[in-house]
Image (cartoon, rainbow, N blue to C red; front, side, top):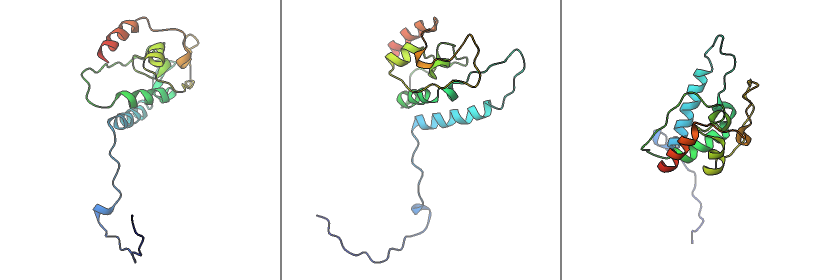
Length: 149
């Protein structure tokens, strides 16, 4: 049983070893920080016609995106899917890369609020995880991903 006893005055040593050390970042935290840094740079880009509306799901669907990265960016992977154009019924709705709504919500179990983007095209509203439409081309991707995960 620990005993309490007076310690007297404590003189903390000075130097680099006693300074608060940063907590080691997880792979997911580092990835998310880099995404935010790159997003800040991308937000400075200016576009001319015919570009009128820009969807950036990493901003308005941040919670499901963060949940996905935190859950699945946990170490080395054998396969990395890259994309640059979020489909209107995939990542544009969910914030999850190649993330058709039903796959993200029901199969991966990813949730979180999806906000309304600053501008929406009338034919492409963001309904988030309640969007009833799906990306036709992503059904094939779902089959491939289910075999890999």
